[in-house]
Each structure stands twice: as C-alpha cells, then as structure tokens.
Length: 317
Image (tube, rainbow, N blue to C red; front, side, top):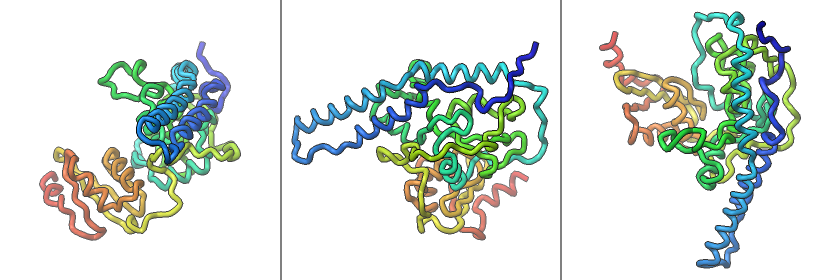
C-alpha cells in the first residue's frame, strides 16, 4: 500500500527547540559584540575577553543538537517515503541560470521575513553562521570533511538554520529565478525537497499562504563583521554593466555584472564575485582580486568591447 498523506506545508514539523535556537544564537552574537571597558589593560583585558567568550559559548552550547539532527534526518526520511515518481514530469526546455541574482535574494529574504516558507522557522545568514563558527569553533563547528566524519565535526544547526533558496518549481522542471518562484528556506527543507516538484512530495505551495508578520528578525545579517545580504543602496562603484569572461581547462564562461547583481556561468565564480561586490568592491576590483588565485584566467571588459577569448572560442568550433 502506497504512503500518501494529505498535502502539508512542510515534510516534518520542526521541534520547538529548533525555533528557539535562533534566539540563542542572537544572544551569543550579542555577547561577542560587547565592547571591553576602555580602561582595562593587559591581563585584565584578557580575562574580560575570556569571560565574554565563555558567555557566548554557553548560549551556543544551549542550542539543542539532538533536535536539529532529528529534524534534518526525519525530514529526509519523510521525503523518501512520500516521493511519488508518477508525479514526475520530464522537461526538455532551457533551464534557468543556476545562480539566483543577488537582488532577487534580497527581495525574497525581506518578503519572507528571514523565515523558511515551508516550516516557518527563523533562518540565519550564511555569512553570520560562518562568523559564529570562527569565534566559537568548539560550540558550533563546521569543519572541512577531510578533518573527520560530518556527523562528528559539524553541528547540525550549521545545516538546519542556514538561509538557503528554493525554486518552488525546480529548475529541472522549468522553474525561473523570479520572486514568483523563489522562496527563502532553511537548510533542512531545501535539502529534503531537492529538485522534486511539490506534487512529487505532497507539499502545498508555500507562496499560496502569506508569510508570517515581521517580528523584527533579520537573520543576524551583517553581525560580527559578516558580509551583509541586505544592502539598501547600490554602490556607485558597481554601477554599469561589466562582462567578466573566464577560461578554465579550455572551458569558457561569461559572467555579467550589473550594479551588484551577478549572473552567468560558472556558478562558483559568480558566487565568489558576488561575495566581493557585497563587501564593497567594484566589479573590476572583484575580478582583479580573483585573478591572483584562480585556476583559470579572468579578463574584464566593458559591454561592447572585444572578447579576449574569441580566438579560443573559434578554435573550438
């Protein structure tokens, strides 16, 4: 007998401890941001900093690891139980660019109130979670896989609470990078839904219900010196259209930078350019910064200028 539960908004209801984790991380960030008394010197200043780190660690350690892990694992299991391959529809048309424009991300985060549109838990900026791990590595580890098994070295909150983006209609089914198709999600709901359609998993369309009223939550965006997702103005240094052409192992990609929105291919390069522009670099500066360590070769040109990789393109035809 097939498993066909009635349609739901999320695969699994998150435990209360998962929702409470956002408050604990906010308290940890606030503890880390306390400025030391200016008059403290030497050992007194060191002891004050240790007390500050101790308070932040206590808040971070209060995040319920087991609740996070249960939510992550059970959501994946529920997706496997529900998955109905009969609802899958093949799509042969062109797919949207894998990179969601920064402007769309900012608009969606603001619209959705920094909450997952499926399970509605509060999510945290990816950059701020990374900063928290830098300050509190023992409490919120997110270490490279080569340092050990993921279940040992990574705190589940790093995966569950991280702000991600989901195409309601997946790209593989013709979904677009528009506000009408992109929603803010937690890592759990995004990973479990994967590239499935809503019909395949028996999920209701999250855009068919209004997001929760804003409670002032901002995803800890920009805290602890992390780069901000939300920017109210576009830097004049990033104005205009600049094309960045990139070659790596004979493969050629073209990236367009318009204002602070980066689109194109390959996705990894667009993400790195976008991160640098978010820190205030111009498109030219960001591309120059990447030239020093990139495995490929980057050339920057204004719209209309000749493509330096044109001879290579012709030779491959």
